[in-house]
Image 1 (cartoon, rainbow, N blue to C red):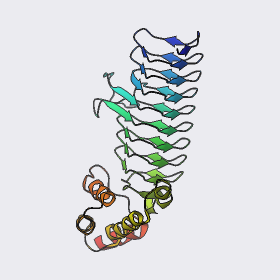
Image 2 (cartoon, rainbow, N blue to C red):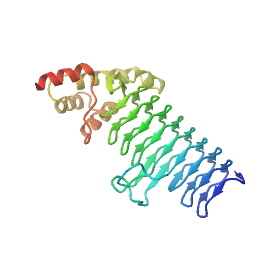
Image 3 (cartoon, one colour):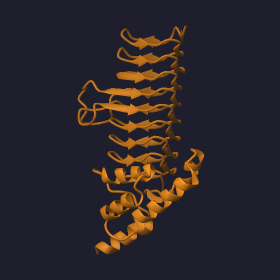
Image 4 (tube, helix red, strand yellow):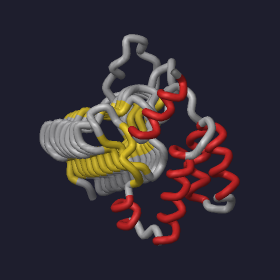
Length: 272
């Protein structure tokens, strides 16, 4: 049997799972769904059409499901979906979608969102991510699974961050970051692969070496980016990790691709 403090305000219509704990002074709106085993520390505010997955733990002063921070939002019945086994620390904010986007914001399972992290409207966030203190996503951003976002980093709207990427602290990301890469600098550029993260997650030495070779070919080989992507696909056919990079590059739309500084300089020189 769960525990709900007498000072909490649970609106009629809210769906509360088994073994849910709701601390003092929490507010849960009428269209909220809390999965089994969810734990709300004191002073958590959840509103809108928000669903929280099982066993997720939310710390004081988090605000979830409030109206999107978009001048185009007109009160449409959009949603915020948060997965299972997440940890949302103090002052985390997450907003639902908009009619201009997907009509929902989706956050995967087992995410760790530290103090003040923000997920904007219409974002998609994968599983097993870590957002350090004050890491933020603008609207419509996409972040793959196993991404680490450093403290005070920010991802511009409509920007993509591929799986297993690392975004350094105090890093502004306005270009797409390929999977497995490390983005560094105040204005993000690629500093190589996220080798430490890959080793921690059990990637073999052979897999990392293949990714290194593909990275070099993609950013330092001859021809256009499209030509280089085609060459990488041909040379590493059958390697699922390299295939993810090629697919990511080919799927680019709104934003250009982040590159290493040397490659960026070379490409700029070639266009003059």
